[in-house]
Length: 214
Figure 1 (cartoon, rainbow, N blue to C red):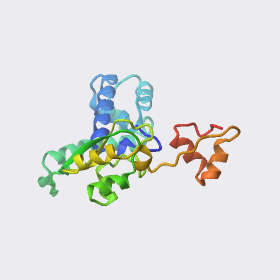
Figure 2: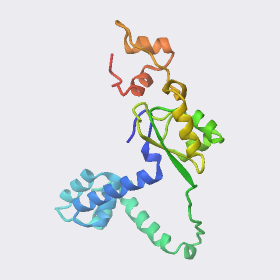
Figure 3: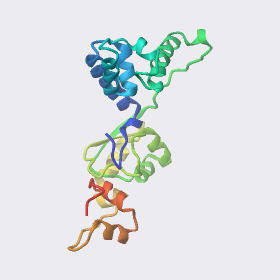
Figure 4: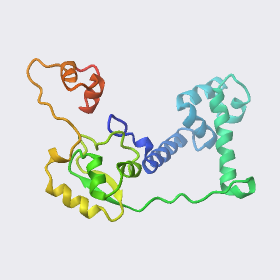
């Protein structure tokens, strides 16, 4: 998911799950051929399908990669690099790499009732706001999504119960970083943006509207 509030491509867990699902789908399209699967992951399935057709319908990556005629240079080089990375990953020390396991920090998960200012969460958790943002890399703003009812926010381990208490105590207006404006008859997106001193495109996207909306 990608919008004004979130970019889930920046979430390691969600982006990995999405990549695996996409690779599985591509692998089905190319009948289990992982070389063509990886090529299509990089260059797009349409690019690879057209290359196979131009090659006479022979689904073999390596002959197509031997020439500039069929695939872009980046795609021709991508597949060997992935295969080389797999070989190195199986035995990194042999190739001069020292790899330390990447452990995730312990966290609690808080279910939010609506948009919440990350600075308030950081205050309740007793940590800098940068720490809350680091635990939730998909968030692009200092607020959770406007339509994020039941949004799952990762917070430092042990801080979840205290944050739940504060969320229950305060009203929605007290915990949000958003400004609210009731549109009056005759107002346009541009006039409201001018009044609030924000960019028109930001105002549209923050309200899930098309940039062309009036």
